[in-house]
Length: 66
Image (cartoon, rainbow, N blue to C red; front, side, top):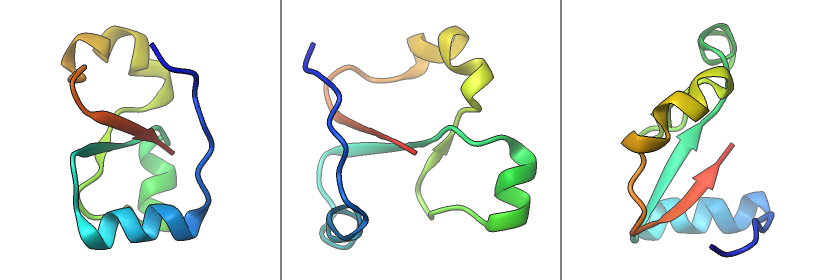
């Protein structure tokens, strides 16, 4: 397992524009998404559910959490 790395917003934007083999996971609560919107294509897994949902997350792609 590799160490987590922070990526700057412009780098995330570039990844979203060019596509690629990664999975974007939104860890915010549902009310936060309702208030602020979501990035299209992101998978919503609230932070409190993350441990229980780890089996749903693929291991063969880059994971980006926000």
